[in-house]
Length: 294
Ligand SMILES: Nc1ncnc2c1ncn2[C@@H]1O[C@H](COP(=O)(O)OP(=O)(O)OP(=O)(O)O)[C@@H](O)[C@H]1O
Image (cartoon, rainbow, N blue to C red; front, top):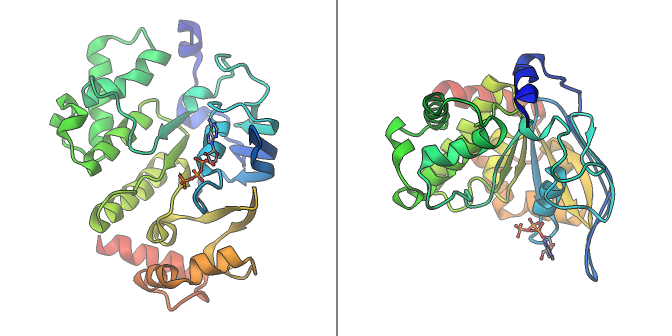
């Protein structure tokens, strides 16, 4: 990004916000003989937390990498904020690459940099002319926003617990004031209390910063606690997308097994539901009660 681009960048509240910040049409991804996606379609609504689920190897991470331009699809079209990702060169300035933040599986922090320096990486990439002191202030603010104490900014990743590393990765994902946040299995490896706190933080950030969140997870509790809709990957496609009650009305065996298996029932019960017939408004009411208690 040039100085001029940075100067011309509108503040978040003035940026173009289409109803569907992510639109994927007819996505095909092949690796040699292996076809991972074959005609996958998905539309993500503005301001929602969409959970992306599917068995291991169904291509959830490949889908995310395709959307953020780290994976060139074999075919299909992907638009982010109305700009084609698939038609663009990897380093072409299409005005949207600084509008998303990504928390990769495991945090993917640079081990030789402090947390604060990790958060500064995207800032330096997109705004190299920001004064070092301001850069440090912004990084510290993002660290605190992610629920870490300010002093965590000067620690190295190997001095942090697993939960703190996730938060540090989140701080880096928030560095550029994104409109779109990608989270790849954010609660994997966290204890249940840490996972619930991370879920709550995700929901609070989504509400206060007006984010759209693309959340890959295997965590049923997360789906019940914070996801507005869930997209299910199977058979090389998104086979269904909707609220959990809507998904439960579909006959697909994987969906039935996933949500109606012992873990799915336990997650539903933990949420306070009495099973699959729970309505969306009931979930919302429970969400509010949980937040009031927290
Ligand atoms: N760069 C690559 N080269 C070859 N094969 C790949 C590549 N990236 C992904 N794959 C394959 O694509 C398939 C989907 O991988 P992906 O990581 O997207 O699955 P996933 O649904 O995220 O799985 P998990 O839930 O286990 O994380 C896997 O079989 C994987 O081996």
